[in-house]
Length: 115
Length: 114
Image (cartoon, one colour):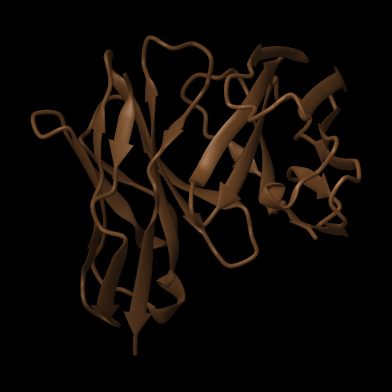
């Protein structure tokens, strides 16, 4: 069965420091992986995706993520955090065999960036 | 381009009342998803449609919940009768092709059942 795990409920980072939000997955086929961000009282917003190709993908707002097939991970990273990056982050996966478009979401990680 | 539009943004009603949530997907998108978000259970997929046809409703919690998509530009999620445990934020999302394209979310309906 497909699953996504975000092992940290909360990540605290000082502004200007690098940040990492962790995600591991389990799928039966080739994974399609996504990161979303949610600000208070808003819907989820797409940040970036991995479908195939380069393991390092770049997305919106300076975020990037590294796909690691051997570790079944897709960690979200940013070299220098901003206070405005504080939000709830979701990792999601779609089984490459599944043509239905259904995503499995992790439970979310609350990122707090302090000045 | 207009994004996914949900209405109302907030709904407060008494237990036992019928609640109808509405969603207008992005034009040209052929998949539509309904999610529920709570602190306790996180983000749950309730049901999704492809070309207006329900494909997977296994996440619909009870028979009190029903969803329809009469045409490509409109969907409803109905709860009848509503209960306090239905209080949550309900999101609608749409995407094109169902493959490697991301889902686009509306800003949700915050539902409170008293």
